[in-house]
Length: 103
Image (cartoon, rainbow, N blue to C red; front, side):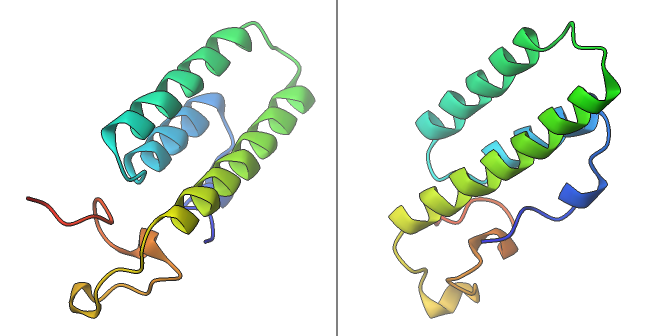
């Protein structure tokens, strides 16, 4: 599973924050979503005093790589979607909204 569209455009901490929250919305359950949203917020608090531009870019790159790893890990837990969803099972993020059916 590739990073969400726009990962290559992330240059600032605010863009990263928004990107990571969009990634969280793609996770399968509210519990998992809330867990990772909390982790994102905590990481931003920890690094809020960082002012070295090189270090900020390193953090951004690592955060995007970590988000990609998490999305791949979570997608491995999910069953393949039914063909009627019209979603490529190798890329659940191509589906708008949650990869799970709405009740």
